[in-house]
Amino acid sequence: MTAIPVRDRLVDAALELFDERGYEQTTADDIADRAGVGRTTLFRHYRSKEDVIFPDHDRLIATVKDRLATSTADTAIVAVTEAVRQVLLRYVEEDDRARRRYALTSRIATLRDREIASVARYQRLFREFIAEWMGPAPGAALRAELMAAAVVSAHNHVLRRWLRRDTTEPAAELDAAMAQVVALFAGPEPANGNGHGTAVIVLHDQRDPEYVAATIRRALQQA
Picture: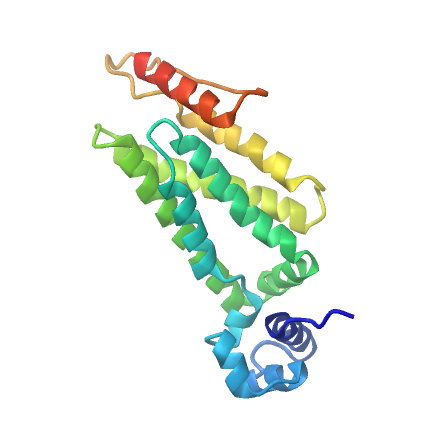
């Protein structure tokens, strides 16, 4: 039998205790005892008792930054889509632990606030990246803000559907949701003020995603 890693044992212990005793009534020592480790071991892996049940957002954000950093002006949209997918798949990999956390954060305000704060970090990261990609054009800052919010909303919508077992194909649903986000913002700001922009919707394409993104980018620049 494969031994369960200490980090996972701590997560399971915290989830069990928060369910059994309540969040406020559970201490870091309780979690360590249930996991069969010392208090020092717990704090070697996590900074606080609430940290135990959440994903390692610092590492996830670093992963997202690394993916965005590899993009070019022509592949920025692909980079954003793939970065969002990486976050979603991290939750999917957790499986039951992610669903148990969702149940806890739905009813415990302290944990829910912590989750909201984490979401804001991702949205800020995407906003900064998109703003840099769009450049200093008039209205670009607002469009970047709106697009980042839409990206995070698309991810959260699909994630909640998966957590509630409303979908068994979250990655595919996220790709479809991101296609809608891109369609909303693909059109450049109209230069003549007549309200007519350019919308691009890619329903299916078997070619390399980088090639498709570059083609879309060139088309938008020429519109």
